[in-house]
Length: 178
Picture 1 (tube, rainbow, N blue to C red):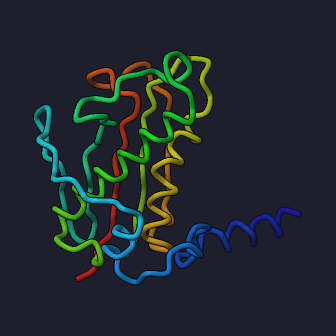
Picture 2 (cartoon, rainbow, N blue to C red):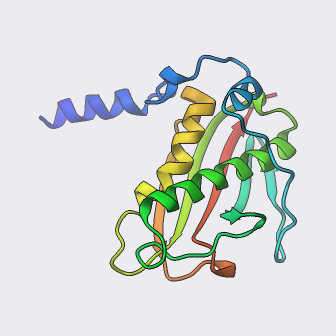
Picture 3 (cartoon, rainbow, N blue to C red):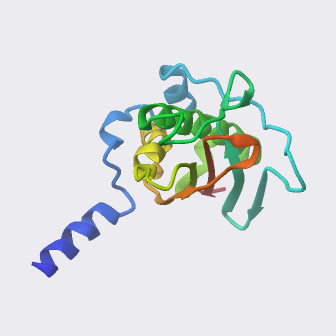
């Protein structure tokens, strides 16, 4: 049984697989964004002593982006003032902001060869255990936009608080080609 599970894991972990890739038919990332009615926002001004992104070699590290609603921090705590569905929408909104920053960093999202990792912090009560489902809001959109290139590693943590009381914060690592 262990050998069979390892074979399944290897199939899912291969570079060309993403469960949502069947939904991505456009070769151009910007065509996909337009089809989804997504407009990339400009890079947000950092709220503290950091830069929005750093590139080293072929990797681009995007600083954490907090959820925003109507241009302000999307304030709330999962399990207290927000439910999983609303948190998932917040994570999706962050993914759009991250893509705006990634576009500014690399100049053309078609240069992205892989979304390597997302790391998500979910402002949640001690009894809330659906951080992974909240973070799916970002992961599913990334998969829909990038197809197989969007298959990424991920961590999702529950935390006691996020700057400005935001409900979710997500950072990203992407790989780019020439």
